[in-house]
Length: 303
Image (tube, rainbow, N blue to C red; front, side):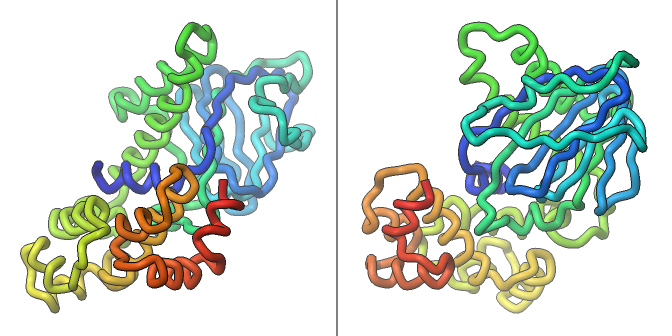
């Protein structure tokens, strides 16, 4: 897997959901702060995004909105319209699908997807994203994103055999293409992960760390993979990624371990070995330092 795919797989928890909604003006809905990242696509009509973290933003047909940090925000047909709170029940899998709000005016149709990330280990790539990612509809721009929107919208409009399996995969595609679109629009001198994923030396090194966290990597080994001197690699990696190579490697090992504990029945010894630790004791000590709980306890409460 490539680095961006790894990030999404490791950070995701639970199953993403998506629905289509239809609202008649005047309408407004407030999404409170939480652990879910939201993605909204305007299918018909228009609306506004109201947030404490951004100026009011108008959205038109084809525009895509991604809110990666779970900050509170509201969607309204226009600023000043009445707003109702979105407060789903815990047992309601697709609560937005049941919402029909507003009056008798112009209709706005949205496709809304929700994606749960692990709040205890946010990836630095997500930390680089602004509170609101807006991908405006432009002719000929981001055709893969438009295709993902169309496929997902079709499955939601006309469920058929296999739809339940298709929707989570299509939401993954939607998020991947949103991130690609945002990364592609960052200037060449941008810092952080926008630069990392365009830097062949850093990307190659990250790919090897992600693919083989069990290896006893040293800075010299990683510099050789990057084709740089030790000093030049360490400085370049730390500047771009925001932490030294071995610190990032430890972070990735612990993130991988948490995902294995949540999603598999692998023994603690197996998890330790796959994450580069020679003993359960050393692994347990490192894991508790990262998560403040022992691996066995995390497995019990983290699922």
